[in-house]
Image 1 (tube, rainbow, N blue to C red):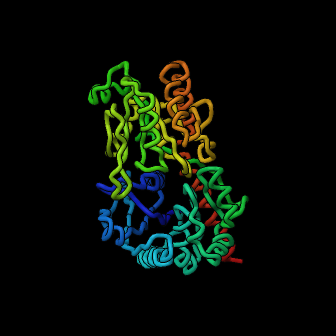
Image 2 (cartoon, one colour):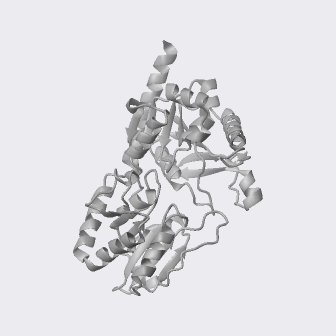
Image 3 (cartoon, rainbow, N blue to C red):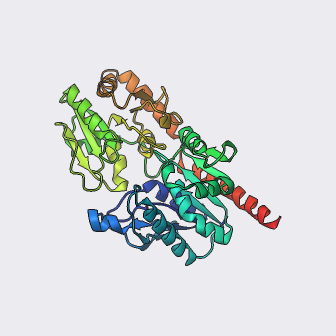
Length: 388
């Protein structure tokens, strides 16, 4: 494989740091010698109605002397309700029109099932292999009609699932079969996330050596659980427990965590997150739904023990060696897990070592090598089918 087209629903750009995971994959593909183009439609409707900033419609990224070309065509979106078909039609149209202007790739990688639907017209026209990466917190099957679902089932020969949960959901929804699925949990770049002494940031934030620091990283919404964490910290009411909340509200939502002992709250440049995570003692993510949480893997790479949800999306990366798993809706359970880490330094150290050990096998270079092998197999199979 020399040339890969990635279809996504986002890509980070200056001032808009979201969808970092797909950028990590594109960057590593590029480091490994693959020519990468990315198409990621963006909503003009959200810009008009919610004042969501627009990314440049085209920009490039230089990685190891090679260039990633990112295309962000404008689309009209109407949510996923009564007029959801408008969203689907426009996203599919702008994806096709943009792809038609590019050199034909060897294969197309769709990041999530809806982006696979967006790629259907282009795949049909050029008879290209389509590989789907499924990592959704919830697969929006109601937005995929029966005809497209049947086409995907019969056409997509390789599906990369970030968790056993995503594999089971994809099969249950009739999108694929067991034989087509490969479970590859999300991964991190060790150049971006690593274990270091966090005392410089602790001093910068006014954190005492005796303070116990809880870190959270993610959007400030109910699904991610930041407000349940905030309530648990208020319940503990311990001035020695400090909080770092890396993230931001969803769209125009004004609600923010307001625990009394927050030492940092807000967004950070991607290259600074590692330092703030290393300033913490524990990472807490009481999420209700995930595909496979990138933020948890990145925190483990920094040596943080984890408190997170006792739910299927965590079972491929978390266990008793690196985490305490809790009911994410139970504020008492969240508080008790934090208290256990605070009072039992031996446990905290053991889970920290377990987190580093788990992270050592979740590196992006290894994951991308496996994905490249899967894509190569798809290309070979596609060529054999066309020649028969």
